[in-house]
Length: 136
View 1 (cartoon, rainbow, N blue to C red):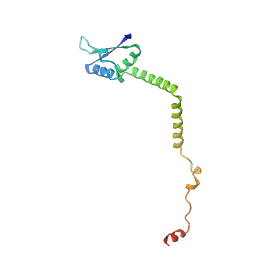
View 2 (tube, helix red, strand yellow; view 1 turned 120 degrees about the vertical axis):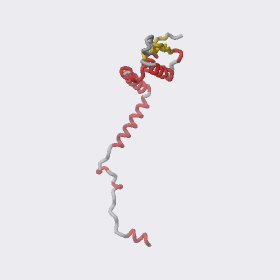
View 3 (cartoon, rainbow, N blue to C red; view 1 turned 180 degrees about the horizontal axis):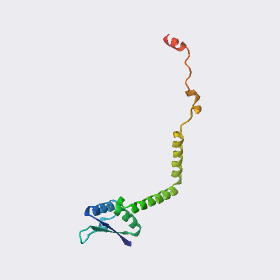
View 4 (cartoon, one colour; view 1 turned 90 degrees about the vertical axis):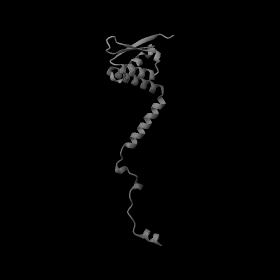
């Protein structure tokens, strides 16, 4: 059996603790690895989760949700490093995305009137010859 570590969190109400449990379970943590303990003075709840060492950081992030600013900044760092790893492992996808972005930007740049296609300029109307031929 793999070595497990414990991540803990304190919550002011049962509702907040249950929301954390729901986030953990919906993200793949086993419900039987999560324990909820009521404070003896009825002032909140402690949550413990037993997880492998490589999952402790993720469990703590999920446990505290988005209201913890320090944890959310840690999420940004994790996402950025994940993006860099993905870009390094798929260089052709990155190249394709760059070419597509360049094509889009090129087509968004307005062209000046001196570069317009000469065929698109309006020709002066001829005298009524065409109108007479069309009536015949």
